[in-house]
Image 1: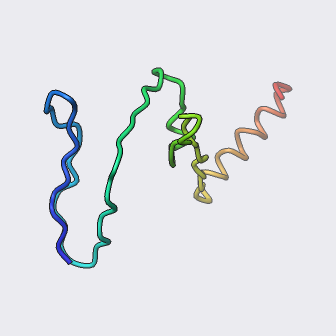
Image 2 (image 1 turned 180 degrees about the vertical axis):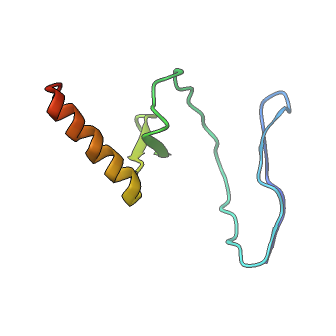
Length: 92
């Protein structure tokens, strides 16, 4: 399947986003009948721990999903050792 470039632009014709062309085993695009937007205040979402998965249409609020952090065995060992040090020093 071949899918052409989709360009999203503002009221002045300035390009906001482009998807690019795709060819091969790709899904067809959904028809868009309306576009809306929200502006989120800077710092209102911690993007290192959460990602936006969608927007609630009625409330216009972002729906967030927590990013699962998978530690390597070495990273977990470092955390365990740090916690042992903190416990032994009486900090925790």
